[in-house]
Length: 333
Image (cartoon, rainbow, N blue to C red; front, side, top):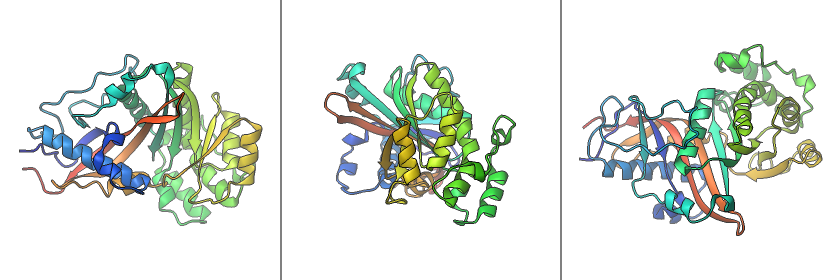
């Protein structure tokens, strides 16, 4: 009998190297959300096939947890009784990582997170360190998209502020994070100013955690996704470790805002484009149901890791590690 995951189980899913997944290779032209959801589906299916014993109260009866990185001391135990670590049994990450010396590899990570939880951010990073068995990561890009940004009516500043005040975690409203009036933000547009006022406190909370990783030498560069020129300017001035990378989604902005472009050029910030939707976590979770009826009810966070071979610019491996709540649609059998 295939292993069944009990509904409401918290699981950590590591897809492993998705570049060797034939089912994904066959689907040419798929978008990022489809790649993530398909990778999760295949991982859940392979893991369930490999593990014959059911799970009780969300804990694994027989499952080997990967060895942690020697520096993974900040990790909130993601393999405790209430959590299950799921990965594909025949993944080739270890093989790929051993084919080249670490100095010849460039590891980039993008973290998708919808709440300003320092615990969740640390957990996501530590899981990447563990998955890749690496001592350091070359760059980490933060993609912080609170859920309310996807539900508040565009252009309604009052709704945006009220939603933020109601749904943000208490740490964001502490005295150590000052609220920035929109009039003080040299933004590219009024919409950017409103968004920045809403998300900047949360970004600062998470950024402070990432700065500690840089201080420890475990992360070399930091970047941020989908903030306007004014917001980037404020973050740049406030931070101890300044953003070295700024990502912008050209799906929602076909022309790079002039203020953002000018600021990046003047401050040696690498400006990159991406195609990741802001609500990637909720969209991907809704498409993860396997043939056995197991699906992700929610994705709390996901970290995408990519490893390039420096001298050739070749993408050697790519994968995702996510924290999810499992929904067993067919019930426990």
